Image 1: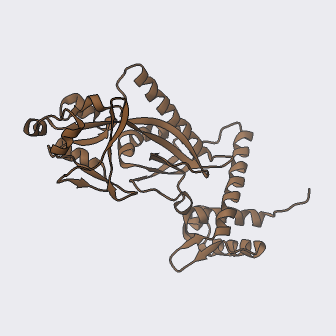
Image 2: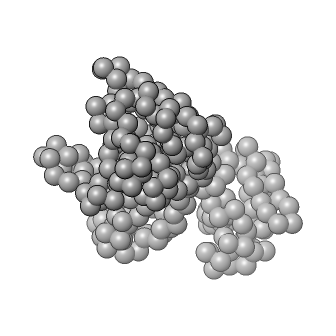
Image 3: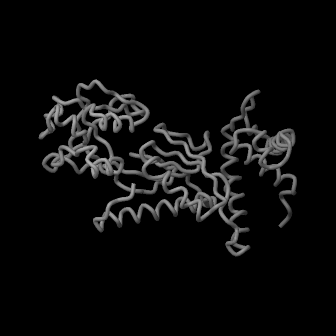
Length: 317
């Protein structure tokens, strides 16, 4: 076998991947301990060799071309294989390290994910977490995220989807509101109540409330309300705590409120609906070790949560 890559070319490929991940020649240079000019020269060397433009450059930013994105995915996989080979040869002694970029919804982020991260870092102290908490759908390739947690994830052949849990929905209100407005007994009663609404980011319309009615699934669309929340669904929970009205949310968010009486569950005969929660990451033959240990850890926590529910123990939230 003749030699296909020299040391300079391999170094150029590594700098190219760093620039693609960081979205910046300067950031790649800082990570590699070289100058931005050296990164730019390396990229130009690669582009000349391939006969393909890898980046669209402007005075303020860079972004991958279509060919550059395809080349990046292949090169990143190859470099990850080399790292994994080194890890195995050294007897599994190389600790997972680097920055793990995570996207999670507000609800799951605050009540499930963030409380777990210190325990994961205790296991792997070289990990660094960069967490985007919000309800918009991120672009894995453009924004260089490693993993995302999503409710109602849509099928995507380019992504791996791992089921974390089915998040149970409940309708709650404060004792003060129920004393003032009465307790709803049937779904039709919602028309006479203040029902706090939340705009679904993907549609810009209030999200329907979900119920079981005589063994059938039912949706109740937005009723008249003086309260409409957008972006942060936790705003609806805060309004319900303050006596503004009824709100449908996930049980894991309000477990403590229900336990101490700050909130009261209503319409229990119509409960039973849930929304699936999935952990998602791009397809690839080999995951970086930082991603692999995060996925394993989160699936371990999901299994423990399911086991606790099965045993009738309070779920951690």
